[in-house]
Image (cartoon, rainbow, N blue to C red; front, side):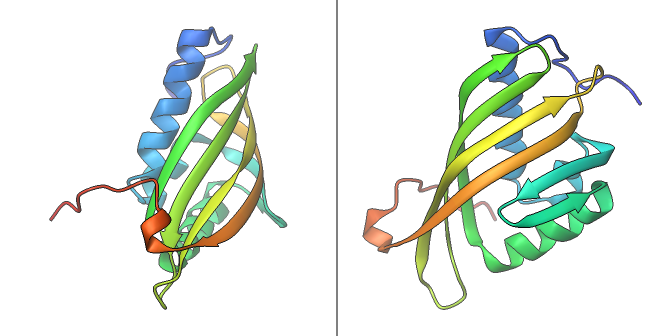
Length: 142
């Protein structure tokens, strides 16, 4: 596999670049594109769900974005060292009934030497919100 810059060890600048790249990819809501940032044998904990490998990641993301409509995410660097990055995040979405939610939490990431994420551990909480309480708005692209 080719390197996926930036690669560890991270500096503050390269850690911020990695976080922004993840935010940008997740906001595409394209499971195949997002999965390319992870090792073939990546391991995830997402809430109470445990995943192993890119194929499970793709299937998970398909299910996620079929439920979480008009999803919009913001990630913020929390800490970094060597080949690890911790982020704080918030995202908003609505379900098929029109109820809006804000999810927030933390992720811990560990990367291999080529810059692919080997481990992703996410703790996430959701809260129902009114549409008028949304923070993240964007124009839909046709």
